[in-house]
Length: 219
Image (cartoon, rainbow, N blue to C red; front, side):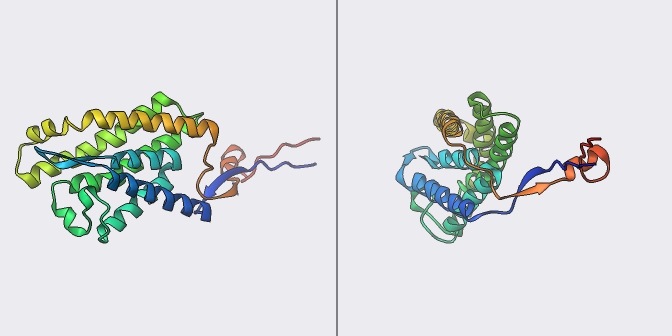
């Protein structure tokens, strides 16, 4: 009797294409960081386009490559390159009031990437779902870590820090909207393939018949 084995495709590891995308988006985040930095008189954290890059990388590349792109950017900045707001770099930034925001970026990328991957696997990229995901990772996660950190370093009350951060909220909302619009357009026009090499995986079928394969038997 002929037997048909149904195999699911999974993606493992990283390809040279994936590493190239990581490098490109790390450079994009760096470019967005150094091109715009508007100081605010009553806040130690300037207005920049950094968080736009932090949202874009995981939205377009997924959690693995997006997080690696953000981690690469952070590693280069902490190594001394002047990639952070105001042309700063090195480990000294971790002692400053904006350190919490810098640390939060990797967590923001993970949240955005994981939720975006889940959304895309279940169907297609939705602008409104993408906007909620970007707001959750790119605003709530970042503020939840960055604002208390800034309050502690400055010896300021959390409420005062939240009031100062209100200046940044409108711009961050615009960035979340822009990211969702860009990601939606990219996924419609030229979907970026998943990270890794395709590998046949029969484990999903094993649970179906208890033998490790799914068999269609023809008498």
